[in-house]
Length: 531
Image (cartoon, rainbow, N blue to C red; front, top):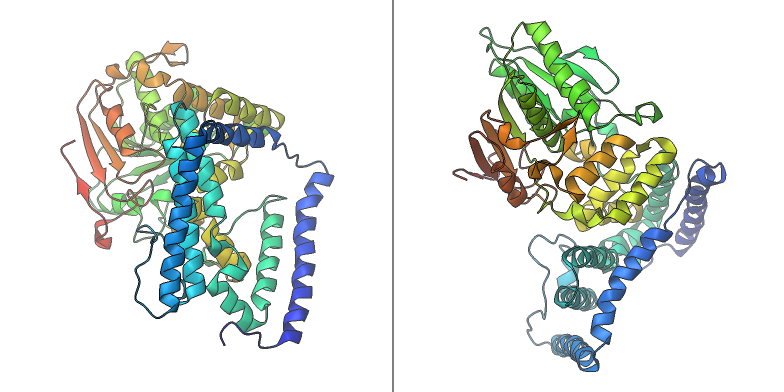
């Protein structure tokens, strides 16, 4: 009875309302394109996907015996599932032919196991998706980058076609639709229209209840003050909360891909609050959200006007010449560049450096490398040239696609099919609060780091200086996280060897953010030393 229509007339009315909301969503998408504010050019991306997956198909279709073997494997698995389903319908106890991998939250609803139809659907999908992924992995003759792209594109396709992503094949959505006579779909389509409107013609996917957070109250609430600003950043000072204050100031260089408050999410998770409670005077760089005026701001400008200028300000404010500095993610990469630059200039103000999930060698740079080759970078540069910056939504979308099963599709289902607001989650609120990036800066980063790996090889030039990390002699604490797909632990570990001083490598549990923003009181995850 839970899948029976309770009120057909109400359902019909709600379907009409849903179509009306769909019209609003379509209008929100069309308007900025008609007005010339947005231009879609997906032909190159589609061509790359088609070419990459075409090479996989070519391998399997080139040899009839190989083709038959692949087809036989899939058919055999389908027959196993069919036989198991027949036995189950006859009342026999049977084991699943295939089960979701550990950590797969898509099929947690009991109906995926208890209802024969949904159980069959689930296993058929898992068999097919596993078979497709296996074909890509076994394809020979592909270079490493092409194989990486093929795996990525296939995973996007596989994730998108999960039966959980369609109202009629998702038991939770189907129950909600029957129980509310389709009211959930009306709410969902209304939210879709709002999110496209909010993204000015692009879908700005809600991952957290943004109304639950007030800046300075629920997030970023450690008391601080802006003491200086220029064309690339503001400098925020946080006074120590203790009677006795440590002599050496602490400077934090966050990434500019998102906002500065990742280390100040709330009092329980705030690293900044913890630091001031230990007697540190903390200075945090808050990078500008650039527009066309900052188009020419490069890595050199961010090093000079960001980090080095902040050191000057801190020295003026505190009277202290020596400082400790922390760099997070790309902020850490910039810190490494700045340290090498300062070593050339005999500037010894930084006495210790700490890197959070930072790469200086990009040989094993993780999943983001799927977006990095000369053709793709050229397309990004062409896009940035029109405005002078990369849209924050572009980078946020790329990060979400790396884990689309967890960061895209659950919210599509929850928001637009169930019609429910996402839960208030400070980390995902921060994750969606993305910033733009200056064209010159982003182009330099992609080419010199990801594509050409110049920093670790000693061939990167900044401010007329060829940088050599071995000249950096200050003690370094290098924190990586075990499940990081953005700055993999192996990549961060490899980077340790290029510095000229003592490096302490520590591996934390979890991933790029949760493995860092993880206070002891939470009693989550673990860490390993001795690396």
